[in-house]
Amino acid sequence: MKNLYKLNSLLFLLCVTIGFAQQTPAPKQTKDFAIVGATAHIGNGTVIENSVIVVSKGKIITIGPKATTPLTRQAMNIIDATGKDVYPGFIVANGTLGLVEVDAVKASNDLSEMGTYNPHIRSIIAYNTESKVIESMRPNGVLLGQVVPRGGRISGTSSVVQYDAWNWEDATIIADNGIHVNWPSSFKRGRWWLGEDRGLKPNKDYAKEVKELSDYFNEAKSYNKGNKSELHLPFEALSGVFDGSKRLYINADDEKGITDAVNFAKSQGVSKITIVGAYQAAKLTEFLKQNEVSVFLRRVHSRPELEDDDYDLPYKLAKQLVDAGVLVALEPSGQMERMNSRNLPFYAGTTVAHGLTNAQALQLITQNPAKIMGIDDMYGTLEVGKSATLFISEGDALDMRTNQLTHAFIDGRSLNLETHQTELWKRFSNKPNQVD
Image (cartoon, rainbow, N blue to C red; front, side, top):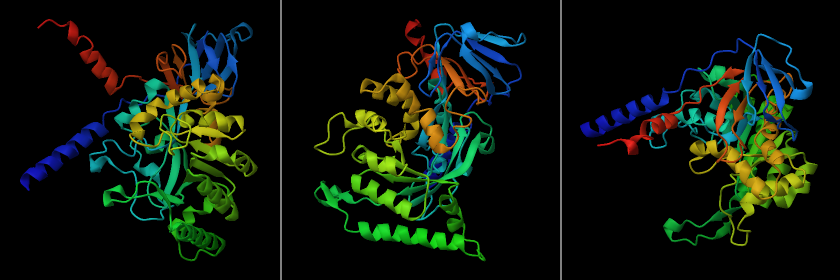
């Protein structure tokens, strides 16, 4: 028992040590600066060669070709980015960064809440700005993200944050603007550990589970139409999906589940709907467009789900949806999703190898998620009046061989790109050269 106590104490200390190791957040921008000579990837499909971008008080005040955009201000810092590329900060959709630090340490895990229906659970208050995992996103240009709870039928509410802050209040860009639902699966796999066939079988409880969810929404709607004499926090939290102030994110993968989920949301009067995962969404493109449903597409680097699926289906799903006119963004959920979020630009790069243009792939992790999350008035593209949340890369940011950042900014604040990984690299890079 004493040894167990010591072990728990050590794990707690490890958690504390890991959880409070991020660099000091960058101070506010105090002096104007200009990025000159870079190829500017705007994020909306436009590319400006040999560009000039001027930033003042955290916002872009000038952007255009160098030949027609003279620098009129004298007192500014000039960043010579000739031969380099500048991009809007990449955005992680449906992420859990900051909610778990070390999977094996329970004290650092605040991913989900007990219970089935938790629309009132606010993921933002559990967000850990000191996370070393978050720190490791920035050198790949991943600067913004959605903080999403997991578990249950209704997981809770998500918020959007920037990845360089003292605390969750400072990090918040927009709070509590989405409710996340896990749609019942119409099929289930056999429990192999009980000797059952591992193949797919119809879920005999599907109709019952859908009805329970529908009844819950109906009760919430009735509550929000009533006098609210007694406060009911879960029902109160759902009011936003009925009045349009919150988006309803529904995790569903199969064709029937996606169809039923959208029809359910529409029957409830929900106007803002996003399907998350959406593995078979390419079979329903017209249906999704007719109902103005957007998609957070499952991790690109994954395997096909069914035996008769194309071997490269996960790689080309984005192109199928984009070609059909569906508003789609990429999301990284799955095994080791927090660590793998840093690979977001390379997921987008894979879609280029399977048919999308670089500009279209870039939109999957910049403009499109910003539109879906409701932050496109300030983030997602490089435009005058928008936040100077951007970075400069030595080359193509969607290619892991050339995505080498030299500068990164959030709201015009110059970020420190050092991480635990770079510190270790510096420490051990010369070890083979040392003489014993």
